[in-house]
Structures are given as structure tokens and as C-alpha cells.
Image (cartoon, rainbow, N blue to C red; front, side):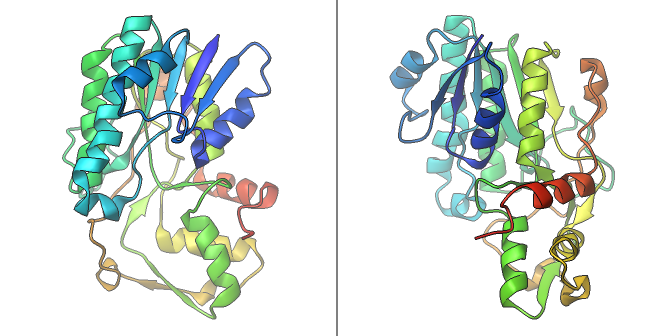
Length: 286
């Protein structure tokens, strides 16, 4: 089986490549942004040719910048996936598209089901929702869409790394306690991507987030405790104290019912994953 991984230089892409390297039965083409511009349809057609599976980890993830540069974000998050899906359709390949909780309004009080109506409240969310639509339209029978959220990992900037750094430089840290979601380790997501593809999971949309839920304040306290610091040095505050260009969802808890159809359990509890990530990787070191 030949895999093409786009966005291979990012946090998720690096973890996926690391895990795929353990399987001699898989041939992998890894392309970062410098290697492939997914907004270029001709370049995408050439890149996809000869591959059985395409995993699109490439994305415009600068949520705030997307508010002022929505057209540019749309090119990467919507036109890029459309190009990949169209090329996969032409070549008989399957496509796995990584999406986000931001496609939802973020104002619920129960976990969002996989088929819940989308209502993005930000430019980033709108562009990722458009990417989902493009994949479904161009490759209706051979795609998976995996929505994730609150991603952290060793291979890039993220909240866990930031909190570990602030613990070393600040006596106290104020963190919002009115946004709830599911911290998800990029390595756990990478493992699930492999499970989906190799296990022949039914095509469709899944929520690939950790089980359980937390606020950013909860997560920050766990990071402090994990490095041996006093968790009470983390102080709760509200989103009103951290006004950002893009609105943040107050509720980013996603439901996991569709995993049963694939014969898979949901990802493990977020606490277990954070503990392992901090104990076994260099995520806390800058």
C-alpha cells in the first residue's frame, strides 16, 4: 500500500510518519508545504498519482490570522482538499481529511454528534467546513473525515508546551475556565488514522478527539502538576479577559458514537494521554 501524506512537516504529520515507518508493508511519500502546494491542481494531480491512500494533514491553522486573510485560508483549507479529492477520484485512491471542532457553533451543552448541523462562527471554521464539503462532493464514496480538537504534540507549538514554558518563567498563570473541549495528543490521532485506513473503517465522518472533557484551566493544572509544580499557581479566568480576533467555541466536546460502526473504541481519556505525552516525549522542553 502506498500512502501520500501532505502537511508532513507539521505536528500531526511528523507523528504519522514516525508510526508509519514501523510498517515495512507501507510505502510513504511525505510532502511538506515546500514540496507540494495543495492549492495547485496540476501539482496535486502529479503528487497523488500512484498512491492508494492520501492523508491530508496540510491546513491553515492560524485561527486568528484567518479572520483577516480568509481568502488565503480558504485556498488551503477548502480548495486544497478539493484538489486532493479530485485527484484521488481520478486515480482510484482513498482520501482521509483532517478537520476540526470549529465547524460547529460551539454553543451546545451536549457532545456534538458526527451528523450534527454545522454552523462555524469563525473564518477558520468556515474554511474547514468548506473543505469537508469539497471532499464529500468530489469523492463521495472513498473518503474519511476525522474531526479533531485541542491538538498538542511534540512536533509543534501548542498549549501543553506553552504551559510548561510559562511554569518555568511565571509565578502564576491565568487560564480561561469557560471553554470546554477535549485535549487530544497528535500521536493518538496519528494511530487512529492508521487504524481507520488499515482496518477498512466505513467511509464517512468521525470525531477523533480524546474521551472525557476539560477546560483550558483543567489542562493547565494537569501540566503544572505533571512537571512537579503547584497546580494552584494556575488561576482561573474568563474568555472576556483574553479577547482574540476569532471567536473561540465555548463548547468543543464531540461525540464518538460512530467508532462502534468501525469496530473501534473512542480514543482514550485525555488525562491518560497527557500524562504519557509529558512522560515520554520532549513536549515540555523548549
